[in-house]
Length: 292
Ligand code: PDD
Image 1 (cartoon, helix red, strand yellow):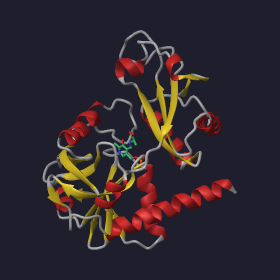
Image 2: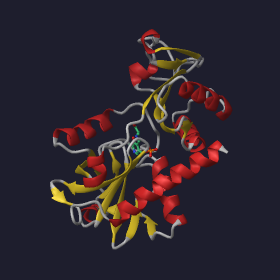
Image 3: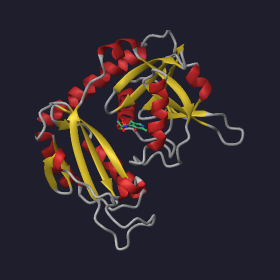
């Protein structure tokens, strides 16, 4: 497999990073996961905008213009066989003597990219939905930064795996009299459906602003699907008719079981069916425009 590291393309076996890299020592870096369909990076502009937001959040200069990113990304895509891929892009604050404070003077960042075949959700998950489990959201207060320091997310996802579930839905304790509310999944965004209306939590510091989340809301606007963006209380999650999970690698999935109990009818519902189809249409239209 060919990867990209600091200006060079090379077989993954030849890629070497210093043990003093701040990504390794401190988890001091940010990343992106970009889906690639028919060899085209999907929503690249939006992913690069979020990357800039993450870099600003950790006060790390962007090493490349969007044009340079696009050409490196396209080169990496071209070096892989699969038509559909998921591209992983990772930037750290570089290699320096271990010290929590930023290196002064700054050292160059480490830039790493790899691409793997994008595996679409298995038919079973599309037809039957997936089971999820809830857990307290014990992460920091800058979940809008796509930080490589993912230990809380790793531990939270493992709770799901240990329970035979696909994802952990995260619940934040409210402050003062505010009740607990849902933020997102350990590696996905979550939507609630009630009485034919789609509800999404607001893009604030407590969740990652998902690119797929934005596509779903764009689709809702374009197709007149009733929707509302607002805080979602934990009771509303348990009383939902449908729950949906979105991410770049999973697209849209129905959550049909939560904490061992059925969600709504326990089968993927009408909103899932509609959004799943509209998402596929949306993807096809974008790809067609790209190819013109
Ligand atoms: N994760 N929330 C979190 C915490 C995530 O890690 C992700 C994606 C999302 C969904 O964002 P998007 O629609 O832009 O993929 C929400 C990626 C896929 C990952 O870490 O592998």
